[in-house]
Image (tube, rainbow, N blue to C red):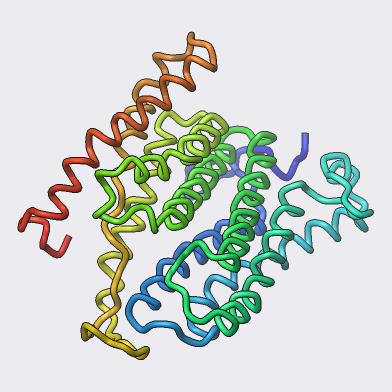
Length: 335
């Protein structure tokens, strides 16, 4: 077994206490997680920037924060691919895949492709606006290319973490499980942002709202939850989305800003945040709670029941919550 991912059993004595020495998590896995966090922060910031200030130069802090993840992915994926291809680590070569004569972890190639797509989307987006003018849509061709690149970096990072986690034991495996859950939470955030045009409060009583959320989201929750085998994996990932969205909702308005793109129909003095998060944490909690009780069911039975429960519970909680958000004066508060 690869010694780089195994808990070392030899005890070490520190201040009279006996501790187990745990092999450190490789730096490139931390880089994967850092890249995912910079993407979701930059995306939330960028949408707020456009809603508040308007269309601006590419060199905004939000854009740079998003593209930082692409540069970071280029660094660690290049390191992994070149060190595996030209290095002498036989175990690494045996655990790698071969693409165009180069060898490296599958996750590294996916991250490299994702980073390349993200970098290409920047000049494509600039050309698109110069050719067709300003857009008010998230789903445009350059944005779709950017989203594909982001997905490549995030899922490539998940595969890299999984490859280490599956060969790890003890405390190191637990740490990698949490790293995988945080990466999964970042993917949930990005998935919900990509569906933002269908998630407005005014659409929360439409079938298209629930269809948009149900497309893909339960699948990614199930996939990562079953990979980690954590009892509350789905709740943790959707909880991360909820906490992150609420944090940005509270923090962004603290920064002063004003519109710079005419026509201005409403004067704004601070950054406009995204709306309150969708209550996907509730159906995720129900699925986590029921999961041990479905172990003896076939996979198709589990999938059918889980899909129905996810959508049914989401409707049961989001439908009345939409009434609260739209019509109740009690919803007009700092939360």
